[in-house]
Image (cartoon, rainbow, N blue to C red; front, side, top):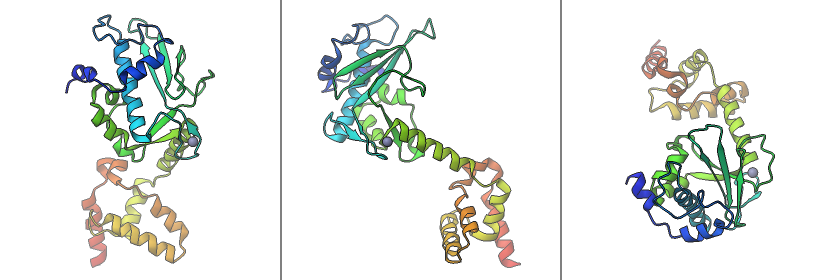
Length: 255
Ligand SMILES: [Zn+2]
């Protein structure tokens, strides 16, 4: 389906969402008119995107009532943000926050997602991917050009986090990443301790090595084993070769 066809897709909640904010927003930002040819993203497209997101949240949580942050449990309203940029003047951006739960819209001239944003708006949800690898599509494309069914299946791979918990999670993740073993250390521990027979044997061999380290109370070794990346090629690039590890392990086993 093309973008244009998708925008035309009739969403059951559209009138409800449109009516919720129609008295709070300028008509050019918020309308149901599909034939707006002014060049700016039309108000109609914005109604569609906000409706699509709101509908996915409702489908998942059953209503527009607040739902908890998956980490700290703080309650979060159904809040959707958006913006409109004037292509001629790059710093001329209008930001919107739509609180569907309260039926309140906010028009802002500062980005509410910035850390130093001081305005008074409801807490926003960060939809965090359970698995980083599921993050395969740009957020804007997800809501603008995918059908509601496709968008929903992507949406199910995320969980609701408040801004604080999302920041914390990302910094934990970054810390773990920077704590990865150096390439030479990784090769050394794979060849001498983990000893995978081949690539498919890696996870199994790594788990066995961890169990053994734990049984022997060798916490230093255990920590080192935990710092081996799940997919070394992702971390070290093409200089990491399973064939080399396999040959070295075989050579040591035979010698
Ligand atoms: Zn939280």
